[in-house]
Image (cartoon, rainbow, N blue to C red; front, top):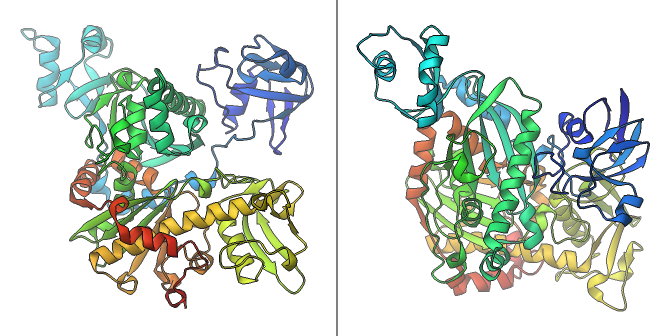
Length: 598
């Protein structure tokens, strides 16, 4: 038994298994699309100390090999090790992906009648009649019309007799998809533009067993949906490349969690994501989404199969996909509105999903109006010099002291700061603005702080230093201001279109990766959110994943999700002169109209 230490502080033991298997068993995700066969080259790690035996170096250059890089799936420890993990690696324990597990489980505890999974078990004790075929006997015992695949039909007769006609079936609606041998599991997947999150669900107990997240590998081909649509359109194999990226990511996540839950089997999958992400996952060309009138190929998806999805699961497993509303309001927002309960409330509420795209919904049980605005990926850690997700090493809060020109930071994991997550970015801009270190346009004022390093060559490269490895540049601040301006302008424009004032909103639901850790006062201070009492804001985390889990566990809620999609009215802000005026006004801190934020 050897001791393995990572550069991030994890310590665990390993023996005869590969380093990849050891990492996965201890909740550490390492990208791999070949299932650990050593022919994709994605699970590259570096050995800093110790000895390993490596069976293959596929995709590793001679220089990398000399520097200690190996494939985790092809390497076995031969001594205690110190290893360096990939910089963008995310562990399955990441906080923002937990999807309100307690909230979900409490819903089904308090309303047990809601628990009716999309896939269910059926126990049968069959009294065979000799004059009838085996399948006819089975249908009589089930008292319902059933269908069966050719593959299972070929196994049916032996299965019935081996189990003395006392069997358990797995059903998807009225189709037999398997003969049960393990616990009934399913996976809910949120395909985000920047990250992918997955929850493993025990359908029998109605609870979340595990959660895993990773970066969406498509990010290598573009930060946002538009650049990915262009890539898919302009490259001969672009669509297949992007599809393979996301399918590989999901297969790797599924493999990671199943290694720790071998007593069950996945019998159902549900996908939630924006319109473009869902098109790319299914291999449907999204090119017309970026061309007026921004039309997707489809908003409502049939229930396709795992084999159609290229998922490494049983071929016949059903894969559900959340319906979209429009080209830029997808199933992730339908899922979020379902999870928030906004669609079922009397009071007027606002729902904001703060991600790469900022989607907005206003309404109640009577009506739902929605719009989308491009916020960019900065709040999810992309496009910012030291940006990162809300994982260990991320600065999540910042407090500046003007008198002493000093500051306090809170870092996730209480370690040396390695980067800044979304909530940290809001804090930094708000605190620097409140204390006169940046002006109303967001420009750094070098004479106001010794922590500012001013660049004579490019003002964009001027920076506020937090630590030797962590800083925020002028260009980063400009990106953050553009993102907050897009979100606020979207909200204010939609409210004006509906003839509703901010003060009429009784609740504001905040969804998205960093929402739960956001300081709402500071977000209002920079003009990102409506100026409302703090108690009206409710943070919901990853509502796309939450809604997907709820629908996996309830046919009634899946029906409600489809009704929500049909009920939503979409307003295209790209055609609104009012939106552009609001956006330009919001490119200041907090806004050109100071009266709104008094």
